[in-house]
Length: 118
Image 1 (cartoon, rainbow, N blue to C red):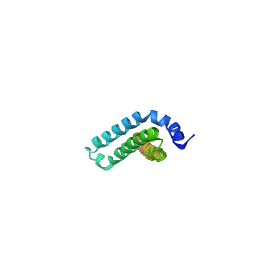
Image 2: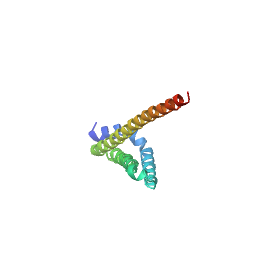
Image 3: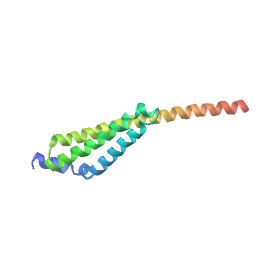
Image 4: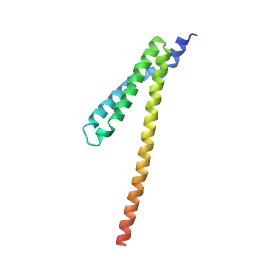
């Protein structure tokens, strides 16, 4: 088997989801644009736009990798997906940390409120 055949065979699972990659990428870009219209959104709107571009790029690259057996396009697609999931993972961790801090602050406030009336 040639390298081209290996690339085409290995890219099948991602190629089958290229439509979803592009769809979620476009929706993420649209979400980022809509987020720009809010005061806080202006600061963070670049994140969903960047993540959307990563997903759309992955979908386009895997299309080329599948049709041409292009190793570089296959690697570019996987690299875009890697970047997307790293960003998503960092955002999830930040969200969890903020949630824990909010729970601690809320719990402390509730405790102070109950001790004031008790």
